[in-house]
Image (tube, rainbow over all chains, first blue to last red; front, side, top):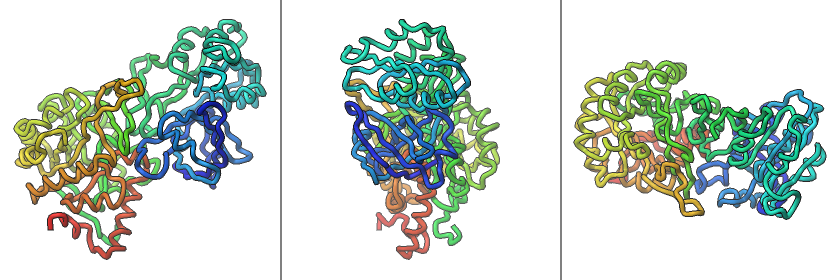
Length: 254
Length: 304
């Protein structure tokens, strides 16, 4: 699961938001090892020691036929800004796939809720649900118009509501403002990824079962360093990198 | 290595090579066994064991810094009994000596854990953690007072069935004084643990929930090199397993040059999970290329 992979393309798709397509390994790890949407890749920044910790980034699209996967991330700190400089033909050292993702079930209609940089893994989730004949409705929140991405892509899979905090695009406010207008009995389950505060509100208020994907400062990414622990409601502790990042509603103390 | 150009014998430890993962950076080995055969390692320093389970500190527990990282995990571990029955059982399948890192709140804790864990068939040596900076009672109080450290070492030596190494903290006025104190009873020294540090976020607030953490990684190597040099100068005979920012073969050579007998790799296991086997292979190539018959030929050459 440690691969040095070729960058196929990289582009900025919103303000400081980058989309990188990465080629499959020669032995096709995508087919052999990738299990579910919501799994992540731990990217090493460069090959020197300036950055000793890798960057955990969700996989947002998987193309098994064309043998590549996609990551979308925000270039915020010095490490991700360094990653943003990579071009087609460059190589990235990846630990992949890591974590447990979302389970695709045979349901009728599911609600997908994303906030900011939590949106990317939900695209592959929407795709796989649609491939299984499950209808998806999407509610995606961003800070402002310049931060919006993947609207068109989600639109191809189902009804997509965009909401911005400042109202510069779509509805004004938070995802909850849109969720309040929907009839929850239309949906079997919800699937969410985004800021902790958003997940906490959904976890506490949505009347249907669901799954959330969490984020925490991570060390190794494969369970050895004990950095990314979270508390479960049953009193036990779990490592987010190996037992998450996706958990069931009500499972984690938020 | 078939050529035996880097094997070494230390108290309790027959090492096929001098490279081992450092405690706290390798959990109990299982996760890394998905990446490579743990038989390749010289030894394994497992994560600290305490008498009872410890839940560790609140998160965030790690933050990256320039060529390094801060951690404040807080000695999270499932406790002595669980480790004896599960983690050490798993390690029985490998032909690699285990060095068990021991921590506690009181001298009695250290004595109790040492007595029991040293009975494990795979544990070939103990490493007393008297230098974890991240918990108020994680051992650091034993690591800064030479008399207390000496007494702790004496008490553990009384009960341990295997040789005892003491892991020294760099967060002291004189590490030589600490080394000389524990050397009265210890079979060896491991050094250095992390340096206390802090990193702020963009709002000027500490990132770690614990506020401070232990600095590790390549950034601390010059500090570690100097400390090993000073201790080796004061104590020419004592076995030293050195750690502090090792990332390359040249780093290993540097530590051997200032008098270390073997080395441990910490933070870089997170950067590159294959780092230990890569360094072992690289070390062999280095010795061959430079016509050095045995790694020990380079030991202490900084003093000559």
